[in-house]
Image (cartoon, rainbow, N blue to C red; front, side):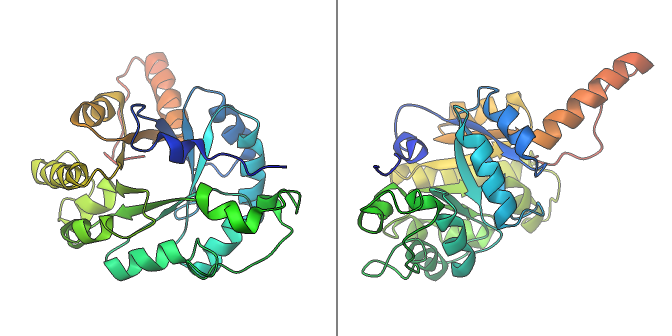
Length: 265
């Protein structure tokens, strides 16, 4: 048995701009359905969704049977959680709220075995196909993707140094928290917020570092693609379901479908 190839990691920096969506329903069935919808990848959110490791494994198993790749956003930059999620079979991890070079280095080191980091060693788990990938301990690092999420002006200011940390495969701008940190909570389209997002993208492109972002609708996400983001996400399983439900009900009631907040997903 050979180590599975991480297609998401291969796409980073290439000509393909992967388009994904967030998984926020915590449902394996919905995750499986979304995996067949045509997205290149799906983002399992363990930060804002009450998903523990056994639930995450069920969602990983559901997505594994679809054409979509899976990325897991961790609840925090916690080495214990990193170890458990990697052993559960995740290959690409997104670390939320990275603020400094030190935090970036810790994130990378927690995904690497001793010699390059401090990931704990176990031999028989889902990631190694229960021990059937014989050289898993020697080869696992090659297929692990590390995405760091920058969500404040302070993090954006530290972007050049964070991007230079060895082992970082991509950066991701979190527009929701960034707008809040800038004093424009819920208003990701504010010119100052979009200006800082543009500055972050420019800094990434100058360093040939893939940069991703999420948006709530096709217009905004299309604009991000046109500006040069290397990977994008649009909404979530929950927001797609709710927006469609509101649209249908609005038609029946003779109204125009609207949402009260301008959140990202």
